Amino acid sequence: MRVIINSNYDECSSWAANYVAYKINRFRPTADKPFVLGLPTGSSPIGMYQNLIKLNQAGKVSFENVVTFNMDEYIGLPPAHHESYHFFMHETFFKHINIKPSNINMLNGMTTDYEKECRDYEAKIKSYGKIHLFIGGVGTDGHIAFNEPGSSLSSRTRVKTLTMETIRSNARFFNNDINLVPKTALTVGVGTITDAEEVMIIASGANKAEALKHGIEGSISHMWPISILQMHQHGIIVCDEAATKELRPETVKYFKEIEQRTMK
Ligand code: GLP
Image (cartoon, rainbow, N blue to C red):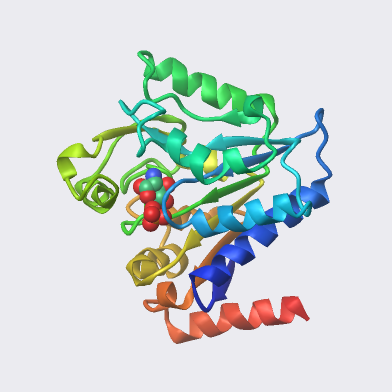
């Protein structure tokens, strides 16, 4: 696992965006051989999206031959709802870049057949071979996508009931009213994420420190889904100093030194 420790959120965002652009450019995607990117919502990736928009508009990276799969979507929120992940992705990222609408994949939280929706999503990912880079955030309780604590570490795309912790935490987007937060969501599974060639998690702020402690220093456990990154051959955590405050000082020093030497 690589742990990239930056001073603050802005540095995390620019590191993550430059890395995504580098991976896409190095892959040299074509229409027949697209780069497949897994994408998150939440506040963690917003700065990365803003940086990627700038890189795209400056001609430094193109999304023409990039296919995206988003991680999750609330059940029951139509795409026009301002807190739906469809709306978020369109407004925050997709409408500003040169991606083809037909290359954007998102789970449909308005479907009447959840099982089919989830099965078809998995099949569509497989039709591309694999996701090359899956980007995610992490919940304060260690969840990735909407895989709440206790989720099977080999789970696939399915319906999940949200925990009170997540509902409370996401209420900030719903006028701080927990009654307005959907109680269920469609989400890719932990196994769907870790099947990707590379997984990059962005974590910023002191409220993510406990999740990082369990993810980096703890045992692998379904109670902290982020800890599955320890089993991945190419896992990266991009974080800021605040998010490392629960890690042992030696752990922080160790990962910083490794990155300094890699840079040399
Ligand atoms: C939601 C999303 C997750 C996200 C998490 C953290 O629960 N389903 O994908 O990682 O929130 O959000 P934030 O980045 O706003 O802290």
